[in-house]
Image: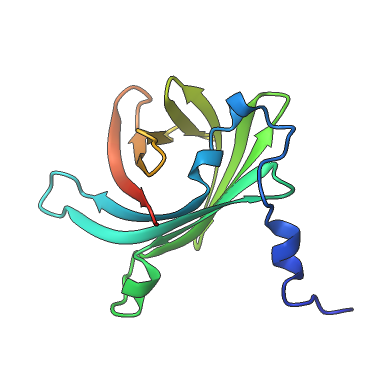
Length: 172
């Protein structure tokens, strides 16, 4: 078997931009493409509240039909200084579904895999976990250089609580 050249995988995966088959009105994740510094907050309002600096990097992939990210929390720099038992180094791939005009989503990190579907609700992008519908990820307050992301959960399908959130600023 021939070994892949060093950049074959990256060249085949990463795309220079959005595929023209995605209508601009469905290009919900395109504005996220780039590198973001984040402040992760969990335990909000409790004695265990903590703030952690992280990174979130988004790119067009798969001939521009998908947006993939790498979520790194704490940041790579912070990982060189201290170990974190609950650190996350994961990826999400969002693939446009032209028949449904939604995005099919998979998130994976060591020990966890989640499938979601994204829909637009006003100015928010709401990703709902498919199997039990007990988790939502919400992108809101998206500007050219900032966004807010929340991880919400429910036990009964009616009362939602905040598990964690990220405040992002585009890295210049």
